[in-house]
Image (cartoon, rainbow, N blue to C red; front, side, top):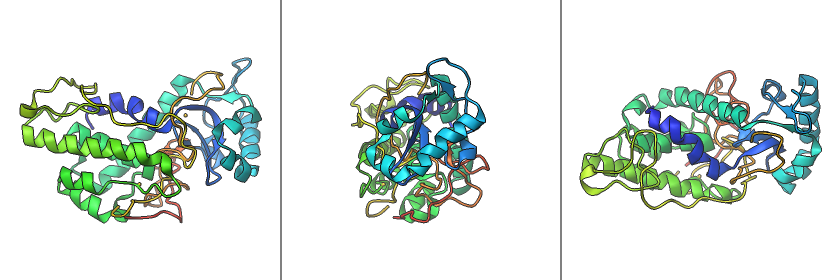
Length: 311
């Protein structure tokens, strides 16, 4: 994908998912952290550089396992209580750099899996690439078979049709609505890039593509214009890749801080994993790598959930 997409992805998905420095449980009882990254099973958690908030000392695998197990054993209650209820269960925290690394790793793994379904992905306009990675973060990277209309539009590079068929169901997952708004805007921008002959390597979102293609966006930055709506509180309804399926035709950080920012989707954002609603194949293990968002590799926690809903 274009470097500009990689550069802006974290700042794009952060407000949609939120950033949580500790482990928490989503509504499906799955342990999550970071920017909606699933870390369920525990093997995905013990490899992360959690630190003790008070001392900054590295947590041992035994300490991480104990904290994870406590959350998992109380998953139903904590999942309903929300991510903040999990902050006081232990003092283990991830740093911002650790979360950034987690997000970057998951993004790369998601792309690798996504390319299996959409081999022409590298030729898409940057805004369309960002929309595709956004959907991978919410559904897992192997969602194509569950979204036939959207998949057909993407393979045909019909961005107007993609915009009309990319809405993830908000049933039981209202926090995904801002992502839907952003994805529609991104696909519409991609259509405008083609129509206006604009530079396809530029990310114009949250702006729009000017007539004639003379935009103000530059590679690696977002364009100028109207910003799409984003949620301000964590969406604990699901972790990366745990989003429900399409609406009709197709649906958080660093340091020892105990505060989270953005709208954390406790279920996570993007790796099709046990909470993922995309159609992840057996090799896809999760997104935001430790947590989830969907890249299909052994480290991915994106295993398509039995409850995934398609278009």
